[in-house]
Image (cartoon, rainbow, N blue to C red; front, side, top):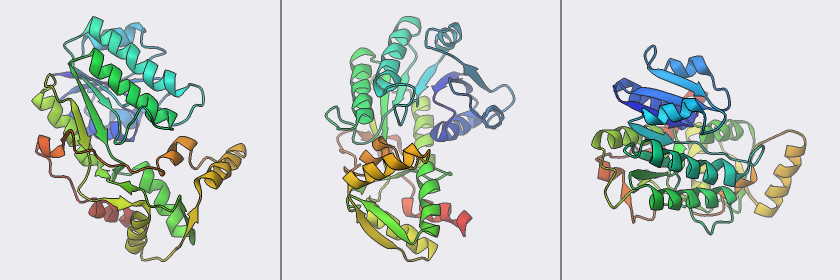
Length: 305
């Protein structure tokens, strides 16, 4: 039984990857710092197959031992706001330290890092900037690595639709940040999990091309996506232009009162296109025909009707 260590595995994406890999018989080690729902995590596989471990930092003995024994290491860990830790420490420093440990303790273990479409060191988003810097450090310092850049991930009770659909059902007014004209190319969560499964099976980690862009076939603007959801819900809404400058102030005021809807970093995602460059490997490379995202959205909406 091969062992896979998954940092950040207790979240939405991680749970789908765990479920798929568990069915293939992998032993799954899930390090965590913030206590997850342990029973919910363990039932994704057979008894004893999924092992959550608590750690304080990457130098903990339990982490070193897990890395020593790992066949593959996956990092899904990220942060969305600078609450108790900065983006530099929570993303870039974490990846640097993890790669440095893997190089010493288990250089043969492939490292798969989850990034995202559109990452760029020149981005105004500190989160995106530190993810891009992490990519560059990984690729320069660890040959046995793969970078996955998924688009917005939908389906399977995702957070994006999970927040948006209830708002659209009950609010007659829907804001379009900056006009809602930025383009996105979302992907179904099952296609993302399947990509990880196939990468583990193929084990083509030493090739010169190490970046996979993971996206569906359909391109939407935020406005067209909202209209599609409204059509599936059989409702009509009033969509209005909401300038980014006002939105930032609005959400900051809500935050003062303990109401968190969007962080500044999440708001930044609405400003720019989130599309593949088409310069890297893709789901097609792995033989995956992406699911129709419109159908995924329609299925996600069914539980609300």
